[in-house]
Image 1 (cartoon, helix red, strand yellow):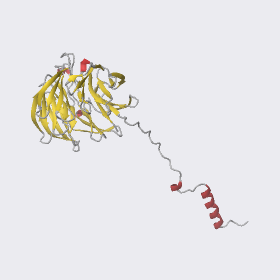
Image 2 (cartoon, helix red, strand yellow; image 1 turned 135 degrees about the vertical axis):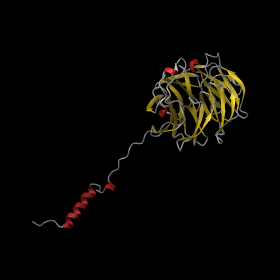
Image 3 (cartoon, rainbow, N blue to C red; image 1 turned 180 degrees about the vertical axis):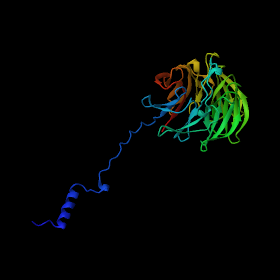
Image 4 (cartoon, rainbow, N blue to C red; image 1 turned 120 degrees about the horizontal axis):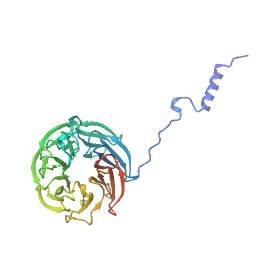
Length: 360
């Protein structure tokens, strides 16, 4: 029997290859990963620092549910985003939690190695590194170009200027005792730092890295909210139950708004709407959210009962919802501002403190 010719074998082989669709790797069917479903227009995430569980809760605005919890480091409090929203910075501290009715002499020593500013990547949801933020950083804000941080160093009565790229402290400035709130003016020229113990706001020149003035505002000031045009600001005075009104051109107090009886209503955090027409104030042990008409510097309507000791607050990008961090009850309240009602309480970690809204 004659063997098939090599030519014939080649023809048969080619025919089989063609029939099977080719055998070269380049011609093989390619598998692709399914694209994640598109998020609804206007959706966002809410990031909540939990002071006692050392983590951040990430809430999806579509479901109003926690979709992830990520460990950060000791005692996360202040939280802010980079200008492009791709990076989140969180103040971390190894100083034990004190507060009212706590004998701080009986607390364990501070773990200074835990102090710093956590750098969190929004896309991967991972803490990528911790940079220096001075001693016991509590709050901070960014420079207008996003290259520097200005932090309050609670235990040393100082404010630090941090170079983000280098991860180092450039300057340390003396401010009043127990500094807390830190806010950059809309034009980026000044940073206001509140001193709880001294009852003052210290004004820092962001270019010169110098304290240029201090403003007496009231008892135990906690936070600053600048108006969008940068001409005025409100400062919460916790122990007075008031907001100080600041002329930020002259860096001077020009008035005061009474929210309620001091010792009962304790203003904590103040933020303004994007258009600057309304200010929102959390009141800690007062359990309420106040709204202020900024044109008249008067309280609007009745305060909203939001939860146990609301501290950090943030607005949705469209201004329709407000979120409050309620420390003792470990939850976050969602306030519908069209009806001024709490529509949901979301369980977070232990002692939620700061709130940040980030839209992709």
